[in-house]
Image 1: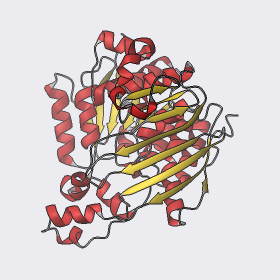
Image 2 (image 1 turned 45 degrees about the vertical axis):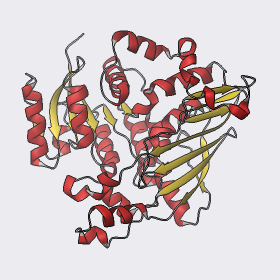
Image 3 (image 1 turned 135 degrees about the vertical axis):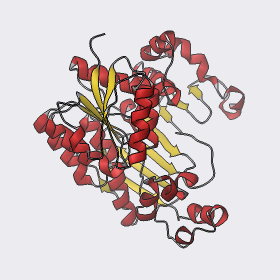
Image 4 (image 1 turned 30 degrees about the vertical axis):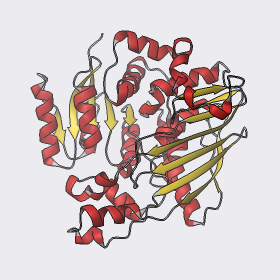
Length: 393
């Protein structure tokens, strides 16, 4: 392979540091040339990790604008807190530095519109780094959809069902941004893990689009209960009023008539799940039981013995990306998804290829956060989703 590209990493918290050690330092495609965070100890740790691996010490700064410089980096990854993603991406696009950003919802709708406008003006390469689009089952199901196994797709659902009470409750101690988000906002705050694969199944921004949504939030009781039982000495949080509802349900209507249901469920005790489900005229796949049901397969009244049968479809429908990946050896975090999404980003930059998850996808998926916030505040009234692809048409 040609000389490694010089990578700049902005954000050295939980996500950034795991990418640094698990993906970037071992990479054959990039070298870590620059790192940025507002905290000195995170910077020092990152520089040490790079040099301990026998590599040159990266340029280090607290100002992301100093890092996003053509003399220092060839491309940049944004792994900062959610509310900083779009402003940092916009700066990178303006500077002509290829950029990839980690996931999360937008702060407001204007950010999504600005992201599209700036990219269309600058055409600087940009990718939304949604790793779940590269999940093994998600890609197998996408392959089955494209081959017509499930017939005409009618409905999809998914969720971010992840007990984050400890992460939120100890946000001050661990300098984690989620605490402030949960104190001040009430919305579908993390939609893209489940929505990304669904959008690909439904051809969103590729002949189909989201038209409107409604969102409804339950009361917020989970965090208060957690603080009382696990941090009773925390006088500030013990008396805090959390705005974020424990369970948020968002229903999206698509232009072709399909519906999508998203569920945010992060402040009650539960197991992890993205609850991915695709349902069509000939059958369905659901993650909860890792099962495929096709019309005429058998007695649907007593289907429990068949739960987990998706493995039986692997030989015929495994996605080509994963066939190759398994043969070469699965690497990286999150069951290998991180390795796939980042290497795709790196290769697209090097080869000047079109990004598979582009600015229009980023805008459409991230917009669900502020739009759901508006729907909830308006009593679950319908809210229109902008057509971010107008100019592309």
